[in-house]
Amino acid sequence: MDIYAQNIIDHYHAPHNCGRLTEPKLSSSQVNISCGDKIVVDVKIEADKIKELKFEANGCAISVASMSLLSDYLLNKNKAEVLALKYQNILDILGVPVAERRYKCVLLGLLAVQNIILKAENQTERTWDDLM
Amino acid sequence: MSINKKFPILHTKINGHDLVYFDNAATTQKPQVMIDALVEFYQKYNANVHRSLNPLADTATQKYEETRLVVADFLSAKKQEIIFTRNTTESINLVAKTFGRGFLKAGDVVLLSIAEHHSNIVPWLQLKEEIGIKLEYISLDKNGYLDFEAAKKILDNKKVKFLSIQAASNVFGSIHDYREILKLAKAKNIFTLLDVAQIAGHESINVQELACDFLVFSAHKVFGPTGVGVLYGRKDLLQMMPAFLGGGEMIDRVLKDNFTSAELPHKFEAGTPNIADVIAFKSSLDFIKNLTWDYIQKIEQELTDYLWQEMLKLDFIDIYGQNISGRHLPIISFNLKNAHAHDVAEILGEQAIIVRAGQHCTQILHESLGVPATVRVSLTIYNTKKEIDILIKNLKLIYNKFKV
Image 1 (cartoon, each protein chain N blue to C red):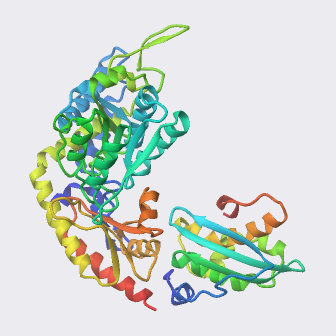
Image 2: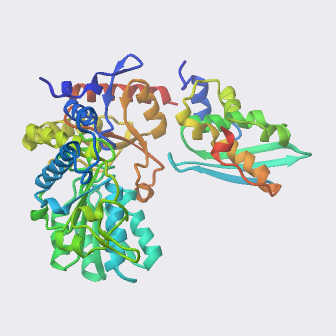
Image 3: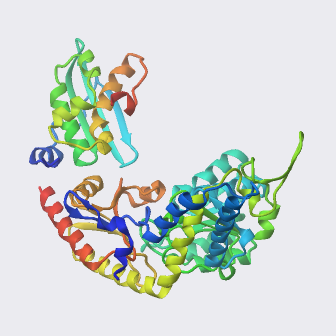
């Protein structure tokens, strides 16, 4: 199966939840130095749940599509549910067989979102390895 | 016999497609003669060198030192001036951490270029942190070549003590006017290091003519094994410099309170060296010698011009740099207008076309280009025009796939 399924390319060209949120919000940016991908994510959390999420990304199709699909998935999830997500969950959401060498592309968005939550709670932020 | 028959890996298939290996600027493939030499060492005369008075060690030592002679001949240097390291990075670190630490002081300017590989930037940044040297960078002209006038201006106006530059760009493939820049530095008694990692497999190098003080490259980019780097250093400078790593092999005498270093070149080769790979490297250099530079350059010139000609026909790509004929390696870096470099490399890879995507260890250069990443295609003697046609066909397919 092609990892660049039409669905992935559609999300790449027109990502869902693209843009920035106005105040009040929590933000995080993540960079994947190896390929120059950059992402900024804004989140609004109410009553322990993600109520709104927007992001701006400059990256490859896999990283943008991952964040786009993830952004739909995360709405109304509570913090514990978000923090429990790992690499395999994102692969399942993507639904295409991405090779492990692209793990940073796959995880860029999730890492940004989890670190927003962890930072707001003064907990140690996660690294790539923590999500594998 | 066609040249690619001599490289067994080129007959591999990936996903049922013939391998098209276009990542030669990262590392070249290995000829059968080198692989045979490597196996022969372990099967017939594996022993530690320069010690153990026995016949097996004698053979190993003799073969190890034969490679040193061949490398010296390859560069027109003396054999005491050839130091084996692990790679180009270690060779530059050796110079920065012994010569740099010993003979440069706070405020001295080390002149680099913005196109340098991280291996020729970070050791100098470390020295900056450690002793307070200053760094200046030569800019590039619009074609991706070191700007000679910019270099001259810095050399004329700043307190430059050391010049450390590449001979060619691993991103653009431009072969710089390095001979003239070295000459300028020499006239001002500035110490010089030339990084020939990218050109060592493409044109002959003569350290006597270049009159550089140090010169560095890696075996694995010239059809040799990984794990072997070369440092050429002017003998009088190497003698003055303190030793780098301490341990076996590099010592003359060890007492409880002090030690004296061994003579050149062993002074800079602490511990058991990479004996097998150094020995096998000789066959790579013999392989180049047998092919002759004329043959290598004729093939590469044709490949370079055809590659650029065909790539320039594509209206959906941005190409970085310019091919000034006769001053260019068979390298091109580019981006598709509608797809990220990593996606392009991924899809080419599925078709067994091996390229590199990313920043190619040149973050400062990519910052100046204003792009997060590029796709790089780099060829060598065993590549063909037919393979270039396959690349072009696939780039068109990728463009169509990503078309909005």
